[in-house]
Image (tube, rainbow, N blue to C red; front, side):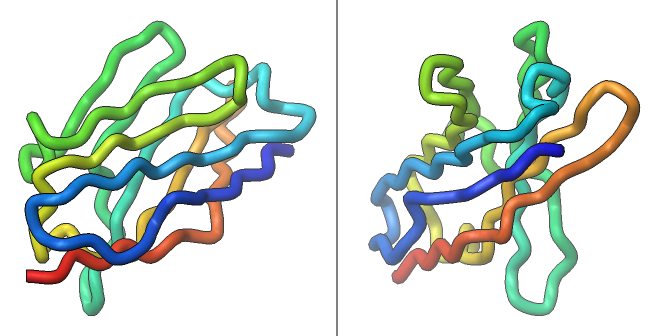
Length: 117
């Protein structure tokens, strides 16, 4: 089992920055091999924005490439999403996801990010 808790969301003006953190805990954290941040905008499906694999490979959706950075802090057991040059279309609920060996997926509860124009 992995428990995920997101933090760091809120309201920011366009052009600003926010840093989201996802704190990971539970007996399966050492089995995590994939970490991702998703966004669900109102009326839209949830979309994968950024991912980080255990070997260090990162991938980004074109909509956030060059503006968002995903990273892991092993000391704090967090996976972070640094967001800069935020746009109103970045508004949505952001979810942290991890996948462990064996294929089980775990999700956080989501956190709201609102970018005002």
